[in-house]
Length: 294
Image 1 (tube, rainbow, N blue to C red):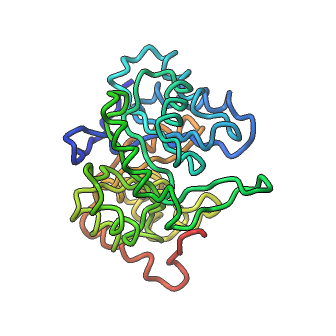
Image 2: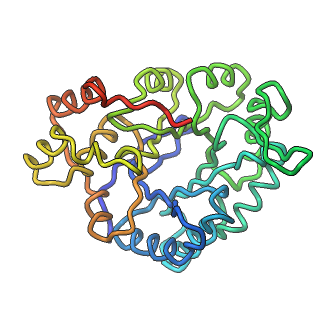
Image 3: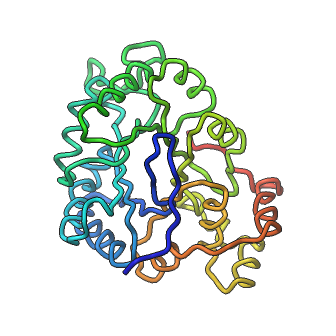
């Protein structure tokens, strides 16, 4: 099955599908669920999968994503795989990348992201501590090592995740390669207007990892504006929210294990300028603007 999913061109002239499958399972030992989810996603036309090695031991993901992709027999070049550098591996970028690649078993990675702009290290007691911004490796140090990965031929594109205007402003003067992607929490209650404008100016595309709102809240899916637009178009509220992001040139990676929701989520609809404007204003309503999770 194929789906009509638009692609966005990145600043290195590669292309990325605008809709992907977020491969996060919030339970320990969910490996078979991941395989089943990715297998169904592939059958429903998904060709973009977003995972992270940081989920690995706790939520058993990267290897299972690769297993489902390899079992599908879909040509590798038709699949787009994103994975990420974990916080505790900023001092060993190449080693961590090779480990992720081995787990995936898919030959190469399309997009490799620095998951967060801070490193963590175990302290003298073995507990994890977050390094101060000026302690090596800084995110500038880490980015320099990520740039070297491009010479291996095993990763096509590099980017960042959870970077703000402030951290990007600190990073960009030191870049030989400008990040192609910044993956952040983004939805109509947290539209990241300033960050989006900044990234567009620098040629960086945003990916929304919470395009339907925070996982614990259905406030957007049940919001009267979203419901009204969905009814007028004969689609689901999720389709409206995902289409809003994509029409704003934002990549979305919703997650679902449900076959019907998968099919709906990948089928975008065209929203009118009026619809877009109504959704843009949701975060201005009393109590609707959300702040970033700390």
